Amino acid sequence: MIMRRKKCLATLTMAAMVAASLAGCSSSGEKTDNSQAAVSGETTVSDSGEKKKDSGSATVVSMWHMWSGSEAEAFQTVIDDFNASQDEIQVEVLASQTEEKMLTAIPSGDGPDIVHTSDTTCSKWAQAGLLSTLDSYINSENVKVDDIYPSVYALGTYGGEQYGLPYTMDSYMLFYNKGVLDELGLEPPKTLEEMAEMCKQVTVKDANGEYTRLGYVPDYPWIDRVEIPYLFGAEFYDFDNDQVTCTSDEFKNALNYKAQFYTEYGIPEVTKFKSGFGAYASNDNALFQGKIVFSIEGEWFENFINLYAPDDFEWGAVQVPVTEAKPEIAGCGRLQGSLLSIPSTSKNSDAAFQVIRYLTSGDAYVKFCSLIGNLPTAYSALESEDLVKQAPQLEPFIESVLEGKAKAFPAVPFSAEYSDIQGLEEQAVYSGDKTVEEAVESMYEQLQPLADEWKNAR
Image (cartoon, rainbow, N blue to C red; front, side, top):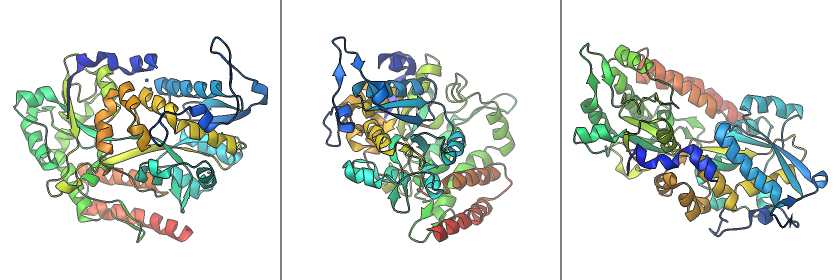
């Protein structure tokens, strides 16, 4: 459990972290010279420490990624380190690139040598023939696959082959307004059912009978969609039988749980109250404004608190509780990952993988993850003392992940469609237009044909 007052952590703002170094260990946990592990060859350094290189003889590797702002700046520092460390490969980066741009550029041959993809993209692009398999590189470079969190590694797998190496991942905890709980003499909930009861105690209405505070709004910000079903023991896909599993009792229990925060508090009233929420990444965040008491958030959220919350904001964070019916699955929440892949039209695949190898191992890996406040996907990096020293806010998330029960969304090529359809059907329940039973049946009717199509294509 974390319990802190915001003003005590002013030095941990994202801006300060970037200024300090907003950021690797080998798979055995020991520090390595990252440049030499990734690229062979001599490195010439001047007396002043400046790297000398003949840029004309180097292989130029292009990379497109989706980060922007301080995260893009942090990534550039790692790339600058790589470029300065050796003469053979120089990386040119294009930041803030959307997956739509990548999807257009790759087939034309005008795309990059490395792409940064999301967990909903890699298998879909592999299915479409847009990515190169990495298996030969993984074998020849002795990549320790067992050092990578299994369900996140699976996000890069399609048809039994690997098309992406996991890079960063998000884990989630239940953040809460400690001031409100303390005022009411409440401890953070230990089960989801306990949280639902607690929400009744913290709810406040004004003299006109309109809400000024609710305990929890399930679709704010967005993380409930996969997280809550996992916490009820639900699964999203049965690989053995190629079946979408959104009609299971566990899945329906999860949606019923979420729906109660609309139906029991009045659908029009909750909808109206939620419409007054300000921008998520701002001072107007609903948790910071005292409009909600509980919010499921990722490891980036402590940076948000330092950047946007009032100085007297008192908060805490605990592992998101599970249903009281299944205490044995505690810690089974969602992991969400990003991956590094090589497009099938890359002109420098060999050099591109050397860059990926550098980025996903050693000090460079720890540096980047600590700078942006994301979790690495390799156990050796997760267990690195340097990671916690450089980004102490990650420690409780690391501890939770290392329990080994958290998992990523199934690596199916229609995961983006799955999420979109689920979101629309859940909104239909929250608005009162559909029952839970109707919503999950509609989900199945739309998603199972996609599963059948994938099965027949394999």
